[in-house]
Image (cartoon, helix red, strand yellow):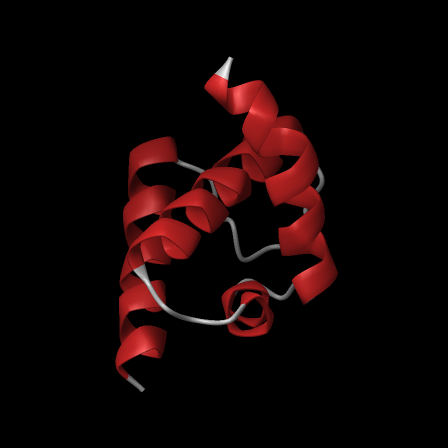
Length: 77
């Protein structure tokens, strides 16, 4: 339960800072970039599973894994 509250706070923080509603199913670049930022923070700061992290924003664990493997390296360059 604690992880869920923490994840919801991360969603609010990222949405507020980026101006993008990351819970929508939008595939616009600004939304997907903001969602990737949420995944990065959530994976680093919580012990929640990828399934739970994705479910909070309406995505599957596979989306979180894909973002971790393919988008995070681009962010870190």
